[in-house]
Amino acid sequence: MTDPRPRSRVRLFRSAAMTAAALAALMLTSCGSGEPEIPEREELFQEYLESTDVVNDPLDSGGGTTEDRLANFAAYGTPQQTFNRLLSPSPCGADSDCPAEADLQRSILVKHEDESLEVLTVYFGEGTDTLIDSTGESYTGGLDDFRENNNLLDADDVILAPSDITSTTGSDIVVVTGHTGSDTWRTWATGGVIAAVVLGFGGLIALLITRRRARDDS
Picture (cartoon, rainbow, N blue to C red):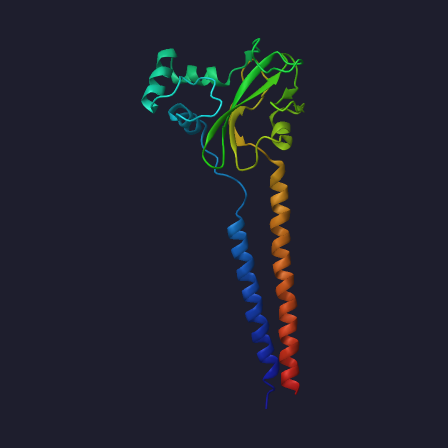
């Protein structure tokens, strides 16, 4: 007669392994990829045009409804001209917060994870590649350097900005995440949690098999 104990141990092992795999998959789903949905450039700019609650908006017309805001923009020109006014560099004025080593400033449109909009101001010197943010931090590697090392934004934010952020002669306008460095942290954290789950269930499987074997042998 065939000993049923090995078969029962296999069933126990398979059941526990399936449970561990299901939990790991559930954790992966709940953690997500860590990347926000990236809107189209025109879509994000349209949100800016229609919003009456943009933080630090340099083109703020003083409140009112969306219709009032759009009418005010129309009085100054086309949507493309408003787009240029928002994102083009401008000289630092006497009442600006430009650092001593900068003579130009420009705006970056930010959409935060909570859907709120904000305009950040960054600074640079004409003819230089050094970008300076509002905290005084400097970045010499362009937009990528800013996204990797700034302490103002995170990977759940998206920004509308020139790809060559210190250019004064025109540059492609891109929509990208506000930060890239934290993605690595999320990947390691997610992997660590999943590894802990798998190892924990591995120990549980071994314990259950040992106990089952002890009962079968008694």
